[in-house]
Length: 164
Length: 116
Image 1 (spheres, rainbow over the protein chains, first blue to last red):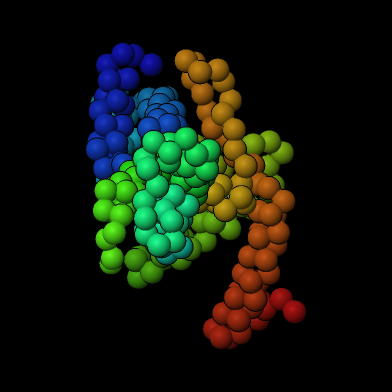
Image 2: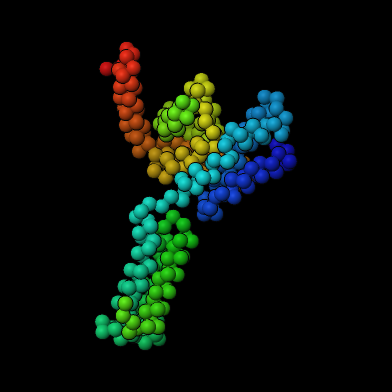
């Protein structure tokens, strides 16, 4: 396949990619799979006597370039209700458990230096990261969840006597 | 009417893919599947080719299909698919359902082709 045809296929892939918002690795694999398909189609059309431009236009039309991105996005990024609830609840629950671990039941805060010396603090911080990493389909969401966990935890430390 | 037929085709894509892969002696890639589906249905089963990929990826997520990449990174690689045991069980269930539907429609339309 000539380099100009490769460039044209790259343009088609870019059109699909514009409407995709998947994890980098997934997106790369999906586009690679589509690239091979389009290349096969173009070669087959040329074997039937079409010129390069006509072959590419036919390949694009038969493939359904305009429709495929939305369907792919739907197939890969769909979150169920359980995932949504987990995404909202996990950081809050983790922050509350951490608060329970490092604050005395009467609401008196443990000194922050002592807090850092407690293994449970570090173990729980790690658990609060690993749980969403395992649970969520995208690591970015896990990091957002972890950030929310820390924001809530810092609020609890900064305002130990705060009553909600 | 063409819209209804398109909907029917779309609804049968899953079972068509599972059957095609179950009958195949080797794993197949997307383009190959399209070619075989069109050939099997004598051109009747024709749809936007790209739409096979979301379906394949959904089936893979449901563990009905397995997949792997053939070829080394940096070279031309192909992703091929096969039916898992779970996929075969789903296919059997889908085929039984399809058979009942076909019989029901035959009886409804007054045709004598219903299979007992």
